[in-house]
Length: 160
Ligand code: FES
Image (cartoon, rainbow, N blue to C red; front, side, top):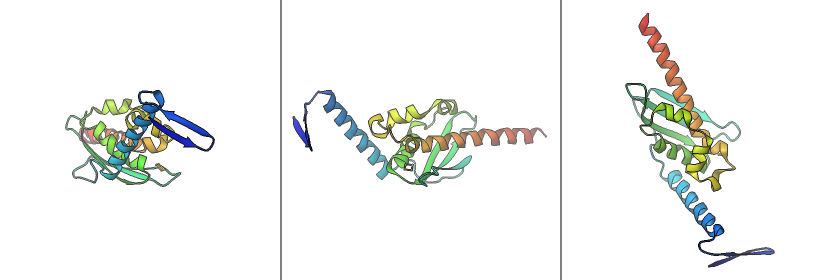
């Protein structure tokens, strides 16, 4: 049992209690984010790619660039990587996202939203930072949109 104090208050942290569980889960979520921030997975450009898509949050200037390769059938992500600079959550989220969507159908990424990122990153830590948590996902969705647009254009050109 731990006793925490702050001015005018005293909490008793009892193992097994909700407060205990929330505190442990929050600490695990922070460590999960820090690990991905300090040791980013799928980091850096590669060749050949179908799309290079820059994204950013104008309010803070943080940026993420997504590099996307789609399989020959045009249905699944073959490989996706990122580069970027910014806050811990935005960069950790980019790293985590690349693992979440590896070899996933594009249609599944279409369905992903804020809640998927929040649930994976740790709701209690990133709930108040939706822009940070979804910068990479929004950029990946923009990359997929560009992939589809380019493919339609290429198909039309091939017909003429
Ligand atoms: Fe800019 Fe997090 S503060 S993306």
